[in-house]
Image 1: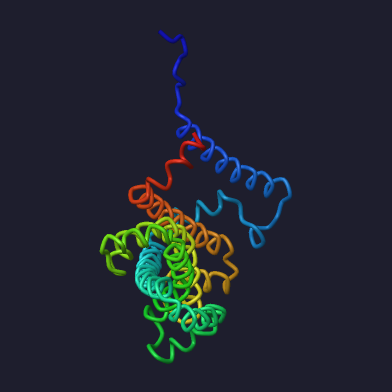
Image 2: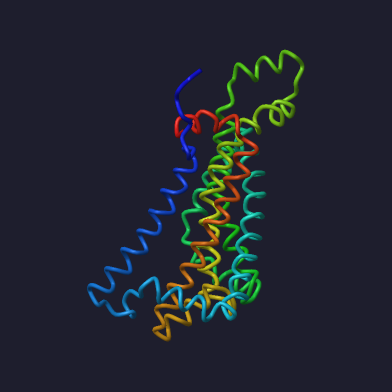
Amino acid sequence: MSDEKKPLLSPKTKRYILSVLALAGFFLLWEVICLATGVSDLVLPRPSQIAAVLVEKMPLLWPHTVQTLYTTVTGFVLGVLVGIVLGMIIGSSRLAYDVAYPLLVGFSSIPKVAVVPIFVVWFGAGTMPAILTSLVISIFPVVVNVATGLANTEPELEDVLKVLGASKRDVLWNVGLPRALPYLFASLKIAITLSFVGTVLSETVAANKGIGNVMMIASGNFDVPLVFAGLFILAVLGVALYAVSALIEVRLTGWAQRKNDMAMA
């Protein structure tokens, strides 16, 4: 029998505990620095002040939070669907790559703040411009990663399947897309953060509801703690959606994550 004792905490649990401690240490250091330097809350509010604002004004902030979350998720989902379709087309056809990819790069290079007024002219101020801004800003990373994943499918494997009688569509659905899943989920983690950027950008310009609108009004009133409270809400929403994406990724692409998990253990 082995005399080795099993550790009380698994490596995964230890990582979670260290993450929580590091986060708590960050806010504690922030609080101490603000108190020690006497910095005004108009410049940098303390975490305790931000927490007090969140508790006090959460009944008012909650509808705006729901609006921002709804707008972001809607734009993100639509952007991912469009991005997957475009990525499949570009990654499967050299002609489509040569024609569509330069146009996509050019459109992605346009600052999204420049397209918000156009969306307002077309659809009016409100939710629709925010959804469209969230949509267009999240498409590019999805297209690039899906196309890259399809392009990296082993030619030898494709040749074997074709010899066995598989069509190009069979190769795409049974080999190409499963091999592209790790690339897709890597892009989702980028796209979800960009979606929040697009939503808040549009809410500050062309909306009367949402966290972005709250932050714009608060900054105009020099209510800096409320601005930071809005930033905190956006950060929590972003982390939550990122965690959901990571959880789905583990469920669907565990075969690609196994080696990394073993290395981190």
